[in-house]
Image (cartoon, one colour):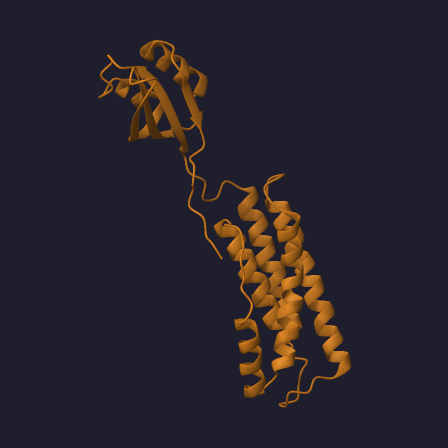
Length: 228
């Protein structure tokens, strides 16, 4: 059922088979790119990355067809690619998984297993959409960075513990620094908010404790990413 359309054992590929492979790789790349867009929030992806996702299967398939069973040709291509320096911006784990998926489907098409590639793409893309649209894998807590400014005469050790216990499931003091010529302290916490916790009530409770000085609550910087 999942037989290759390339039946010969040499490196030659017929024109009809090669065109079918290229067109199939193009369609699969576009399907994967479309599913990626569906699973991302608006503004959380770039057009360049989507285009790359759509083109990678074709590129991989063409490379595989060019190499064929020739060892010398494979080493030549490897040397050519070694001269190219690839650089990319940090991406999420899902971005890396999508890139690997496009490469795998390009490999399948390049080897002639176009039906297998099509079926695998549909199954994996369906799983990707379902997992992304559901609450699968979501943390029950929300990770935030909390910065609190306090006067120098306020002992910050344990001063907010009761508030953190009420609104969070965990909190860690990661940085303390002075400001305003040493008259103020800025405390930086990594806090895990409980599900449904009211951020405004948390901030209001802290304001009553720190003399209504500056408070900042935002996302954690430098979150874990994969770099290609």
